[in-house]
Image 1 (tube, helix red, strand yellow):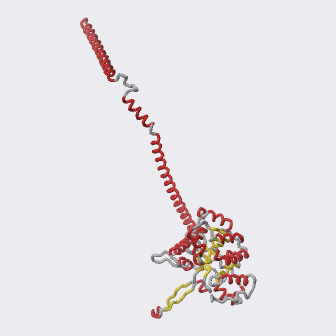
Image 2 (cartoon, rainbow, N blue to C red; image 1 turned 30 degrees about the horizontal axis):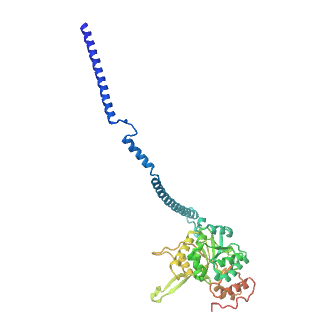
Image 3 (cartoon, rainbow, N blue to C red; image 1 turned 90 degrees about the horizontal axis):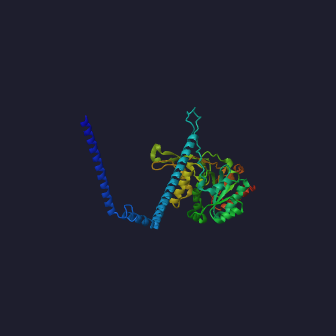
Length: 430
């Protein structure tokens, strides 16, 4: 028992001796390492004079010494970002416009659907009647805000008479607007093609609109002849229709005897006076072409109608109407020497055929005794006691020269009651 205790004590002493020796060894190693660092880094390991510190300090000072270069770099980056932002804004603007046009087209399509109404059965024989009236476009005031303000004050129920004029037609224009005032029409406007005619209209208390400068239009407007000026109206009228107004386009060689707005149907895209002179030529007829060489098939039936007069027509603000103006203006610009009335009728009447898409527009021919051309007046009406008692809405001196004298004679005959006023003139232009 005693021997066991002695062995345990000896073992504890040996263990304690081993721990002490390890501690002493660790202390010795620590002192050795400390001496080594003291020798290698005499100014201390974290001293500010160390090479590493000086290197870092030099980098900081170096970066602080280059502010202008950094500023220039930032300025360049800002400029690039600004230009990119401008480009993105332009893209957003273009996309917004496309969305607006798409929405307008969608709304137009929706209005067409509403106009057509719900599908229905045909109904009994003789009771079916198709729809003829296209919906009007949504007014687009940003197209021309200045014109929009003028039309707001001049138009009545969003329709008005419009005439184009330059100084060359000053005297017929005076007879024109005098007759309009006499009838009591207030919703009319002269589109002045030069400054002199604009001032003339203002002096005579005539509503006038002078367009913003346009090199192509202004050169024709100031010096162009009747046909050249007439061709401008298809480009100029487009803005009126885009703004949502119906226009009764009028040449200035016209005398007004009644208010034409009281005689319009307004059921078509275009409602025009005709150059026809009787029921057949004005409203259409079955013309038979004879070719004897064809034997029993020698007779070929054809439908004919005399042209619409492009100097007096009522046009509603619809998509087909605007397409008509675009087509005519485009052809007149690309086909020098073309006559605007011929192009107007071709685009309005030619049907679709291979490689050509016709215009899908509704049209109506005006009563040729109410909206009278000068051929009807001088060849027929003035010689007929019964017809001469009728009072037309307007008389258009489109078939004859010496227009001013004939216009004054028309006023004398219909307004002042001079029954001999028209007798001195020949039927035609001789």
